[in-house]
Image 1 (tube, rainbow, N blue to C red):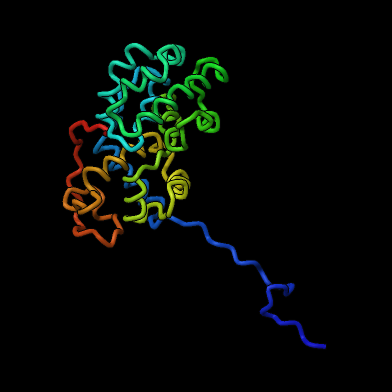
Image 2: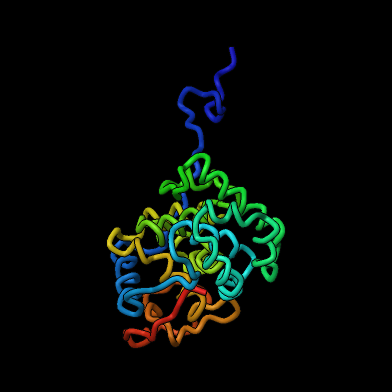
Length: 250
């Protein structure tokens, strides 16, 4: 009788290979220090999208896909003055909504989504914007990132809305290596200290926009240059840790 192959996957001693979850390249103490410095640099980071209530925020964030926040604000200024509730938006109608947002990319499809999400809010949620990600993502035109933004900005629920800036720098510096926004979000939500989580996505967006830029990071202006493990960094001396003038997420 042939002896069983000890290397066989069917061997009683064989263990199935499991892929290790991606991990941050930083220790807990280093991550805490990174966000401590960000909190001093920008104590109260703000989003740029203009809104007056949770409903207009949902609409604004949904409209901002493939568009600038400044462009969305310009298009929605009058729209939100006359339709700041789902009921008023439905009364306005798809054609009128489209006229207001015509300057935004993909405006026809977005006008349909605005009416559809307004209808669902009225029919399924009593005209109120839900607070959970599961419910928010049932709204037409609302994905995970939009839901995270709304949960954070409208309801003060700590989330991580991973945009292109966060996806880029999370991988560049090794804070949260991941191929997809969901993968990066999962790591960041696990490793960022709770006391810094509420503002963390704003800090990372601003850091990516104004310092750790896509084409060429400005390492001399970086307050975490001494901690950073990016292969691209050109400086090991951190910039002075001072509060910066107010900047918005736009």
